[in-house]
Image 1 (cartoon, helix red, strand yellow):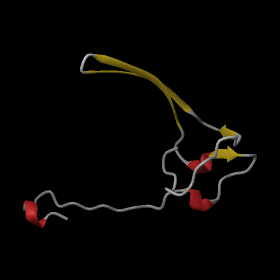
Image 2: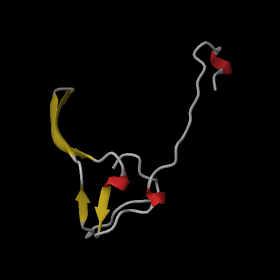
Image 3: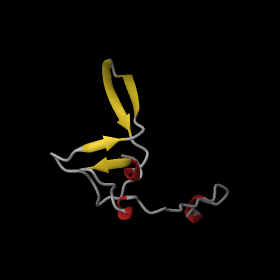
Image 4: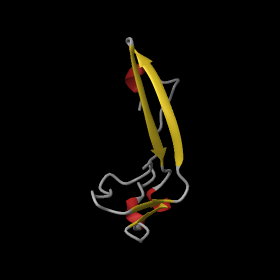
Length: 78
């Protein structure tokens, strides 16, 4: 579940409904090994129904702003 707060999640045994799932098949090769798996992407915890209820607002990760200055000297980077 993308954009979920670090302290929020579902527990084993919870009934979870996904309104608009995005199912993807992945196939990756690395150092002679092949890895294949299916993923189910959920854009936000607020798009779920857990045990018949919508998650609370605090289930959504708060916005975070990160700034960098590509023209700054390496020791001046923020």
